[in-house]
Image 1 (cartoon, one colour):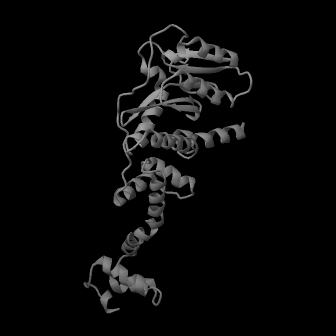
Image 2: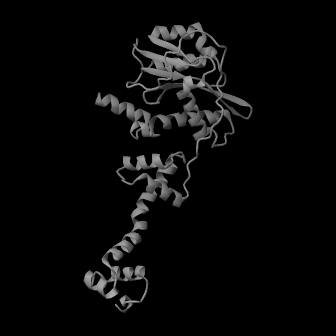
Image 3: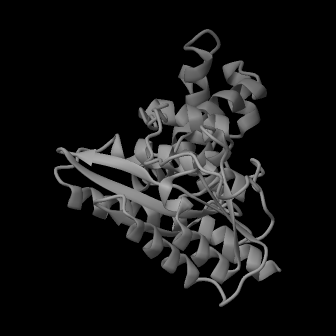
Length: 298
């Protein structure tokens, strides 16, 4: 009790002593003896409890950060915390991540490198950069991108649904041949009824998409073909954005010793991207979760 005397110790030290003694003595009497305003006592009490209060949040942040292989920044981590009923604002998450030394890998701007063909006049640009749709299987986009490991190349050809950004189907090949595109289409077609209406499949003017067989495959399924204008990469921005994301969050961050190793990693990443990687614009859900929720509500 002597340590509470006026003039002895700082306000912070007095608040600590009051907290230790308040189980034995009335708080009002202790504060009066210490000459400590009630508001000051509660201020230091609140400050002293912060580390313990945020310890659970910090542990959750680290778990989410590592689970997603350092790909999440503070906004996605905040959303994931909310998904797990941990209510904390994004400013606090950003501050705690800084304290923990957690830095997500910022996306680098790299030149897109797809396998393109001659300019043609096969199909009009029906999409016209309208990348939003309220239903699944109304607007799809496709493209091809190239990866290189130890002088060997790997080509990825996906179909992406603009409804939720989900990779509907994809094919990996060591050569950018037409079979890669047909295999990709077959995988996508298995998820559709025999005949569809009002589905657009958009691409650039790559040679694959100008082939008559490709056009006939789409027509037979009831799919309308759309193509970007000459040398206008923004017309297929969603596909390019996905390639940039994949390369930033996977290809540029890890060292691959072989094409086979890369092929396995891409397959794992696409599964992660579709099923577990949340998007803020999808209400904090992954593409598949969002599609399932939307269909269930409808």
